Image (cartoon, rainbow, N blue to C red; front, side, top):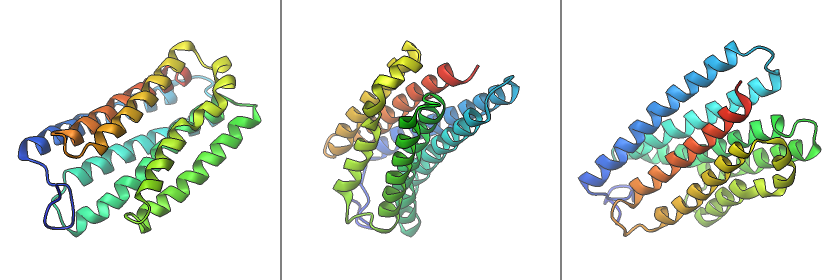
Length: 220
């Protein structure tokens, strides 16, 4: 069901409260996590500049996605919410590419496939951002395919990554990917009560897994 003004999903008050709570928790946790990671990076001795910059890129992408999602989903229907929806959907691509950055540039440092995958992911993400900003409703299915395709592009370097990353980081990456993917199912079940809150809870849980993988692998 959609609201009469702007074609936005029309959720019950309790559904909106549940979703808002998840977003508040997500933004708070994201800001605290980013602050923790920043402190660890600053205090780390001998952390390569490549790793520091890739972690900063990841952190900015994660925070941008969490803040934009909260801003859009908690906004009242209207022109502002319509703009926020475009930015929210676009930031998902930035977050995905940002998450790849430390694993491809630092995790696979010295291997050409790392640089190639990083460049490919950011290139596709840039196309996705443009589609969401300027053609939001025209290519919805393509956008979903790009989200999932980018998310699972990591399998193309699964072999090299398995020799570079710890078992803990690999498991956290895999669990996060599965949570994101199953979350999409709930996102599409629009007639299911609380489907939006469940979808955002799955996104938050997946983001926690990937943040943990980054901290385990790259932050001393």
